Length: 270
Ligand SMILES: C[S@@+](CC[C@H](N)C(=O)[O-])C[C@H]1O[C@@H](n2cnc3c(N)ncnc32)[C@H](O)[C@@H]1O
Image (cartoon, rainbow, N blue to C red; front, side, top):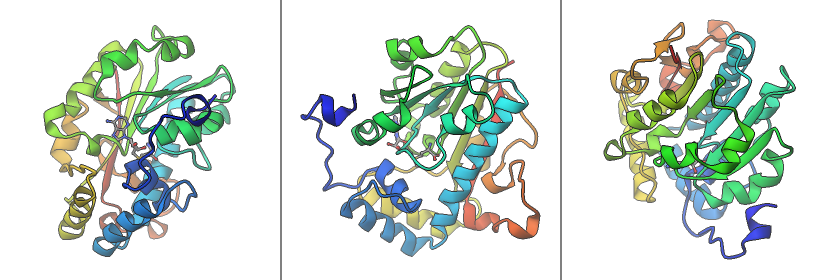
């Protein structure tokens, strides 16, 4: 059952832009409304390569999940701030390598559940939980998550393109730490995050466009991004622009890092 079938009282506030639907618009999806498109167009005016950034972030997510399944032996994932279903969701990537892989998708936007329930929660190996990642303790105790995942075994925690929506006062490093402390040794944490380090003014323009629309976007520099991993062991090559993290295409086919302006990295729970 998805949220629209089960609870017609869910208010999707289609008159206001939402991060999940704006990202869907950026990636060329179909699950967004006029307000989302208008908000993204403002951001694109400031940073015309924003679509490249979103696509490169999504490609990073795919490479990181493949790395976790193939090289780190991870068989279960929590995808925090999973967003709208897209062409290659985490379970499709992971199960394409290891059919028994399990994935719990988490987002606080009711529309993700409404649109994604059927597509993301297809069988007992996948589930969707509506929760705010700023309440990591509540999420870790969620019965749907507990029924799908075995937290005594290593997990992959993905917080890809979501911690820049968590303001400093909500302690993003503390959120990561809570998951890392609950995870078995050998678990991995995958993070990506927008930055103004590489294209200062355009990135600040995007931040202003998002904030004007009521979507709080916090840009962090490489040091503050790296600090989100806390005491985890960073997997090679460490913190990089997402397009430069274990790339699979030659340098001349990769975008200028300034056009990407998102950092990515993977940490291992010792
Ligand atoms: C830019 S999308 C990223 C989607 C996907 N992780 C990716 O990188 O392709 C960010 C998602 O995070 C969700 N989000 C933002 N703040 C959140 C929070 N506090 N708790 C849960 N989800 C959140 C938004 O609803 C949106 O779906």
